[in-house]
Length: 133
Figure (cartoon, rainbow, N blue to C red):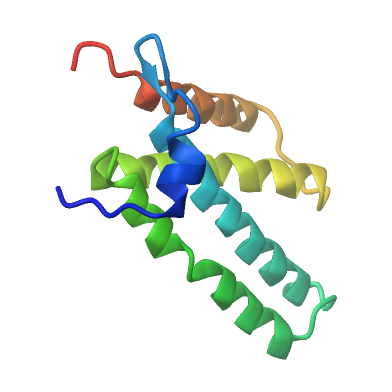
């Protein structure tokens, strides 16, 4: 698997011990970083939908934010495969954006849906587990 080194490797990855026992949190960090890009894109889109940002400004802004995704995904694949990175990204994004919708935009989540949200956090922990590999 070819790897390229850049400022992320020296300024961010090399500075921390990403392993804790049998858990590796570096792929989770990349998934959360990609999810935060999703948050920017979806927040801008929501603000366009609500009429708080003009479409002509919001669409290019959301698209520009999303251009970072391939870079982060490729970097993440230096530490985990494509399938697992995609699942980590999706779970992280779903969790963070759902919480943002509930707490910032006052959207409603009820009943068993909260259990589903907790299960997604548990699933992220399972993806971080590297024991037995």
